[in-house]
Amino acid sequence: MKIKNLLLPVILLAFGTYSCTDAYEIDAADEIIDGNAITNIDDLSRAMNGAYAGVGGQSFVAWSSYFTDECRKPSTNRGQGVQVHTWSINDGTDEPASYYSGLYSTINRANVVLERMDNFEVASPEDAALREQYRGELLTIRAMAHFDLMRFFATSYDNPNALATPIATEVFVLDMLARNTVGEVVSFVKSDLMTALDIFNTYGNDNDVTKVTPTAVKAILARLALYTKDYDAAIAYSQEVMNAVPLAATPTDYIDIWSDASDAEIIFKLKRVQGNGQIGRIFKDANGDVFFNVSNGLFSTFQQNDIRFFSLIDLNESTLQDLQVGKYIGPSSNYGLADIKLFRVAEMYLINAEAHALKATPNFTAAETAINALRASRRLDAGALPNLTFTDQNDAINKILLERRKELAFEGHRFFDLKRFNRGVDRLPSDVELNTFAEDLDAGDYRFTLPIPSAALFANDLLVQNPIY
Image (cartoon, rainbow, N blue to C red):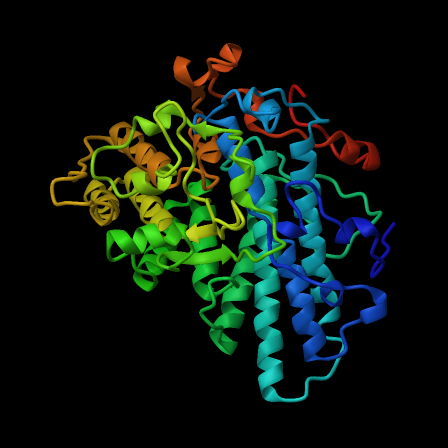
């Protein structure tokens, strides 16, 4: 049964770690309800704030960091993230339920505005253009959420017949939607993103990195193409983004990214203001209790005079026995309040290198050019981080994955990289002294795909569970 334009509280409420606090600070006027329908461009602008409020990022960082080899649990952990860290995951675990409902809340928010944004006459050509820009942004938000659902809940990214998650093109409340296939979801996501690009090409778009821009759309397309092994598209889109957004020009520029003093390299980020969720507190409490340290395994991968080391750990607080995560420290007055960088151009260099190395006819020279340009920008001196060479595809992917591990640490990528390449979690014994039973997780373990939450299965007879759960 379809009940359109009827919003239950589930659309507007926060969902644990994936919530409204994961994006913009909004007030009641920004929420979309029948009592404040969109009747003019100002209403639409406020509704856009509500749509952006549903965009999450903290959940990806938390899950990937806890689940993989990025973290070590210290004695000061009070139970935060332990189920994920020790792979004690089932269809009743809080995080999968939170991510599933949160991403569908994001989709519903976008669909609400898409369905109502044409219900008024615009007052000027400028307002008409602005409305179309908003349409492109909403389509991108909806596409990204569908892609993220697929990343979490599909067993494969390149098997078009594998089950993904339901596609939602309308506001839904009581609808029962069956799971679509990976091929269907990828086609839908591409369609929304290409429509958004067409809109931006016609009506323009500003360069605000806290909003969706044409460059952000191309970055999403590059990531999607890489996951689905469409390497030619991954090369083309990543190169366009690389041409548009420069790498940090100096070590200071790079370090300033993590203090939010600079938007160098940023393509799309979630701005943090007072009242938002503090991403840094998934690693350390405001009172100083450390929930998770940088793992010894990750720490050991860094070479001397690699500028990334200075953001990896909190140099002011860390010791060799207490390596504290440094990317999300935030201001001294509000520990952990830091912007979440959803897309950085550094990822595009890594996508470009991987796609060149793994396409049917590898181009190792192009792959080396991309990854070495990134490494050159991370050198503190000329002798640091010598250029890499690739002897074959296996050698290339091992080196690229290591570079991704270092460059994208604590940004929500490691879990998906291990899943994409069917690799397990291999922690050092020194990283599991308090949980020795969770040292290794085999490649291909079923827990690399999250379970469909039991609440969703109970409410929707058309859903089927992922294997083994």
